[in-house]
Figure 1 (tube, helix red, strand yellow):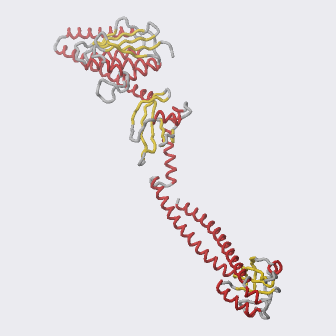
Figure 2 (cartoon, rainbow, N blue to C red):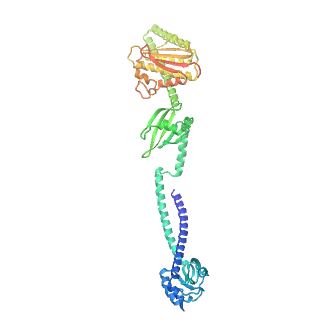
Figure 3 (spheres, rainbow, N blue to C red):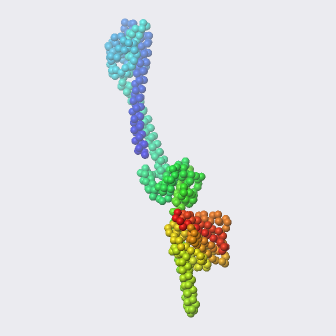
Length: 512
């Protein structure tokens, strides 16, 4: 930047210097010409000069008058000649009485004009002022020629040029100092990076912004959008006024000190989680918002939750079978073989009856597996887990509906188990009923837990709400509601006859 500004200053000042020199040269020449004409006019109008022309020897009188004037005006010569161009005065006395040189007296002697000329006289090239001498009768009797030699004029012009170039050089030096100051200031603003580094950083930033799956939008202090990445455009392209939309939805009412993380917002028909951070450089200069579809996060959360459910189911089964094996081992060690055989037959019959009942009543193997796992988990916790005898699920489930049912049913049963664990009630029971006899799949899950208070009922399905204090809870029911809503279903709750909560899950059979 310093080199570019210096080169620009050199070009500008060089051209400016040439123009100023030409202007000064022309101005000085005009001023000297006017000066010569003024002196010549003054001499031509002097009465002593006019009267001297009537003398027998005008030379002695005129030379005596003109010499002091020449010295006072610093003219190189003042020549007075008669109508025939014969000199009556001259700085060189030997040239008095000879004809004037230059051939530029005609306009003054014949037409009575006063003018400025550039001609070469007996002393050399000069700027000359010519004025006719007119007597009292109005007759032209002679001419006055006042000259300033070109070499003296050039000396004056050169002296002025030196001054001009001195000040131009001074301006150039000040310009260089200013360039250094400006570049230092700008470099400080740009964190001491050179243009090439800024360009490379910009390309890297652009690549990062466009490759990220999160939508990123930035605005300035006037609310104008300054940056939108590809992911954000995909969420906002349906709206024509992107600037106003992003400002209204993402940044409205935002203050310079506001920092918001994972705030839920609605962009069109899309629910997003937004992070908003202000940009401050001594003062508020804008803000950046990053956002991602809530469904993307819920999908990951759902998968993790299902994995957790499967892990809990396996753990419960392993723990239950381990307890039963230790019971059988103890009976054998106590030499109570008949009791051991009876216990084995009883457990076998119970499992066979339960498995046969589920196999007859539940057509979907994944729902069958979920109920089996929750049954084992409940038994391990000392909770009676029953499915009503008239329950039936013969309608096959596929795709999104199966996923929605597994998610919501698993969450509701899990909540029921945990609710009973926290309850002080002696009655520990979960009852399930399901049916697909009508146009909808219908599930009821009720428990003997503490139930839901009227205050909690208002926010029961809100994300983040939980009756438990652990961080990261409060996702199950919100996910369940969202999953069912996506397939046209719904989830409701009311007071259970067992004393706790009764959740009702409804999924339409027809495809949406």
